Image (cartoon, rainbow, N blue to C red):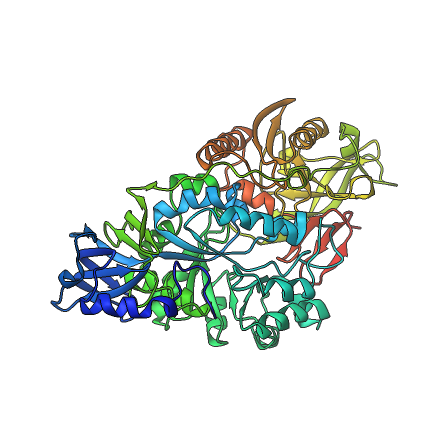
Length: 604
């Protein structure tokens, strides 16, 4: 597959590279005396030199050889004594919108940590503004050196006939997108039930991708590791990041899938299966690393793929093997290894110089032969992106929320208690439990039960104004007093409100309507924290550091309100994700995500 992300195609500069390697013309850049991480042989090569020209590697001085013959009067020379030279880090599956900033600002955050390429599924924006919104989002991406490779969203909506989104994506849309110059694969095929039910659109998207010689990335959280998994893989889906156990990882590897091992802000999956994978001695060439979703706080405070590498090594993974999982394994899966993924002659000079293979701190980051970050600081900058109005006016409920809006009727029930279905939250996991709890009934309405950690939840269609609908449910596991609301609610990104009283819930909802979307925490009639996200109700127009501080303030507010779980914003944000078991709430009501049928709130 042609790679449109390199400075110069290889066929335009192959003779120049050969001349540099032979010493017949000088290199543009020479890195000297590095310990080279060879991901092609899984070894470390001491005292290596790397000569770069035309944005690509021309020569390696290894085994006692040097690149002195490549150095001319104008060659830039970097002394990398004591440093490790590794290929630029790649995130094999990421939703940039989870960082709450546009792609250019995201690049400022991650490139200094050694990330040179991301495989981005923009299905959050697509659910709000469709493929036009996706195109606009990636115009912003073109302004930075980060190789932001698009995997167009396959599931908008995530599951058909259970929710209302702001747009839809069809097989025809995917066929067209496969001709875009920044598209390298199909975004995660979350609609595995559609594949197994032979739905025309789901299968059509896969066919259009395969016909364009691209890979289909997947999302298969089903416990069926036999016929359903085999059928899913046979249909053409070749990777998955939704694995919760070593047994799931192994089953998918044995089926020939590439498994994306995930460590994001909220979905901390590596401890659950990586030590067993290491102990089993299974071949890891089909294993990739990914973050899936990273909060701005995580990026600014802890890092990006360097953070995933640190965790992997702490859990017992060999550091070079870990690097393979976010470099050459990734490039090979996406069909880009002819250009990316290793520091070898002919490949793009995407190189990170690391202090060591324990902390993975990037001292210098080079993309296409240009120094773009040093000592944790980006050497490039971009002005704020000017978003069109249609990307910043996306919250329309068709009503002004009041406390009365949040009354949940219980027709025919006397005062006392009622049994209701609720979503049971497990901290640090995307999965929920389908539980039955008792809640108070007063004056014909269902109330929250804070003493039993049972909160009320409401989901409002924010895309269709007065024609939209809303629904109610309950949730356990958050332990808060007050109310929380957000327009980041995967994947339809409708307005999600949760709380223990109607007045605070109404204030939270009104606050987000007024600012165009975001995240808010309210208690006792007071707004404790607000993160404004006016771009599609998902992204800020401010610097990532500013957004990170606002998110930190929101996290402190959550703790003040009683919540103790990690990344509760991310956990709350998937309570509407109707493609992950067991129970979810959309604007249409409860969805059983095992049978994909609607469920009643009241339990007889």
